[in-house]
Image (cartoon, rainbow, N blue to C red; front, top):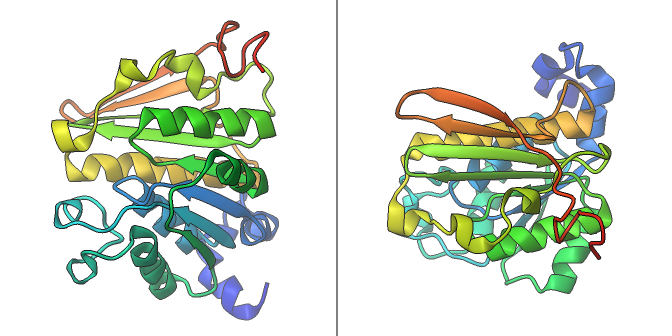
Length: 250
């Protein structure tokens, strides 16, 4: 690292869990962020600020006025442009040393698989269960760590899949079918800070996976209830019949 980087990341480097070695791991890492909405915005901003060297941003949607209540990487002036380009502009202003790759088209399964394979960590910030299942499937197949978050109304949840832990369940172990959790913000609403809370935690878990300190949420489901400011950490067991990671799965 050069002197400017040492100064920029000094408050992290002084942490015994990170130090210079951990910061260098971040600088040399690549993270795929799928979805640049309410969750993806804080994830991208915090990972860029923390010094993750290469961020791959994937989202085929454009900024809409209704997004601005919670999607903090976008601005009123950017309504109508691609979300990945808007997020890229915010990252450039925040930390121009971060390399950013923008994917503004809908990813085919083959292209998504390739992006997952190249990433050190994948952060799922989507609100579509079909896509969530596909991302999870590729992460399991390529043994790529996955940080998956969700937020709706006044509630949020967080799950980590870490292939280095043999008994760790995947996202599909939690939801057998997409219909079980098919809710979205457009139909059900969401409080702005709730997505910020979950997105910030996703960024934290991604950094922990990259640097290799502490204990990840692998094997647990973290549930947040903003109405009563209540947290629950629930143990999640690997489903032996899971179609993605269970015994007999492809």
